[in-house]
Length: 281
Image 1 (tube, one colour):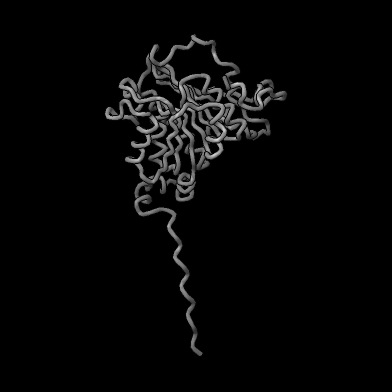
Image 2 (cartoon, rainbow, N blue to C red; image 1 turned 90 degrees about the vertical axis):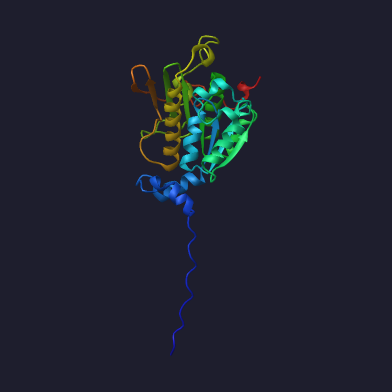
């Protein structure tokens, strides 16, 4: 009796094109990332608030890493003074919206990345919808009002947040997962556990007033991108509950541990912040 061969199984579609395999080859050979981790990056969406000193290098490395979708929120235009540190913008982009400039740069760097440019300032009204469609949020803003808005919005929406700040010769980076608990079962801290209130208006000079070391923005922005990649792929020990402090004068990195404050108004024992209404007006 003649046997009938079974039809061949359909070929399994490749997770990556040949171009992507070559492009991400140095990730694919890392045991901590590999194919599964690179696939997570490809499927991930990240919201980047601000395409300036911190956001520019972060966007550059996130795009190079193969994050599938980047949502960029910024209402500013590229100026000549930006180019000393905001490396995603070029001289030819002066006068363009930073979101459009960043979108063009990323398209040239990695055509596999989808970019959504939102040429607006982040507000209490548009934040919920923007956060709803992403996996991780990066705050590269340059003012305290936006930092508190982003951190409150992420805590309420249950989104991981990587936030950083730049000084003249110093920078800080931390990760917030306020919607989760730590290994000991206690809640993770919020931004308000670390900084309960913003400093009085006028006490912290702006970048234009004080100046800033350009390469420092690149260091901090790269660390922000690294934290976001680590959060998506899931390897190593991140900066939840730890504030990384960079001193560019002494070339020193230090870490300050901080924890959940039961008196914080966002996730404390008696929360008073339950929506974003205080950020309106």
